[in-house]
Image (cartoon, rainbow, N blue to C red):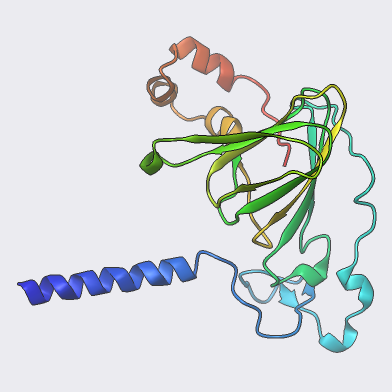
Length: 225
């Protein structure tokens, strides 16, 4: 029996190591893999590679990230993502860059990147930023007020947010450890699911009156990212 239990433990550890290894973007096996959008013949985890002989400097270049973005929306912020769809040369490199513009009082609402950790640096304005740990760590809030030059890190899979608490526009840049980090905006996912989540489930989970839940589900939930 002990031998059998030992084998089960070894098998579980092996599965865990495989899961951990596959949870991040794979390491590149060549100098670069400039993306081409051709999925008619084959599906890949990422994008197909352009013939290296046809690659040009422009495939690794983007201009315009210095231009302020429009923040006139429901949340008062705008996220500009620079990934392999924008710079094909980023394909297989496992990184993404974003610019986040905030109007005064604007927020990047609580959200999750299921495939990436994030490091954020404030360039202009004053942000209140933080993340909430998992149930295992008692849903602890880690938050700071950030000024220009300040840096904050959001671990993979943790709910996190930013809020412009200043009286002027704010700008931040962030790097994410995946070429396709993904975004799950918590409010949108819960109250804007299509088709809607059963209101009884949300009512019990959030300890809200069912009429409030149904009102929230009736709202127009827009996507910022």
